[in-house]
Image (cartoon, rainbow, N blue to C red):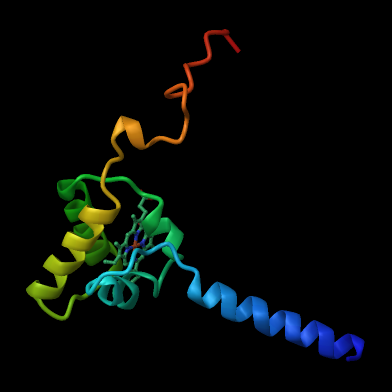
Length: 110
Ligand code: HEC
């Protein structure tokens, strides 16, 4: 295989790999979140949040009022809210990957 062929196959492989790697856990409502939320921003902007249900609700309102996001129906909105709350809710202390607990606040004055 020549240089271009190698480059092209590498490109295709990485393209397919990234296409299947996303931050959203599989669920029947996942597709709704993908359809509604990644049009304007990256999925990581959504998946890196850790919010309570009310906070997600406010975020959806914000997207609706400020960015003119329209949901197909009330039902869709509720399903998206359910999805976001169950997978991107606030983490419990034990879920943080630091064995020693949270990193202490820097005590130095700089
Ligand atoms: C029409 C475009 C649009 C759609 C659709 C949209 N958003 Fe956004 N979203 C934005 C923009 C623009 C920002 C950047 C913040 C701003 O300027 O208000 C943003 C920011 C965010 C943020 C970051 C808020 C922060 O604290 O910085 C979250 C979380 C978010 N969106 C969630 C969602 C979710 C969940 C959905 C799907 C239900 C969604 N968005 C759909 C336009 C959109």
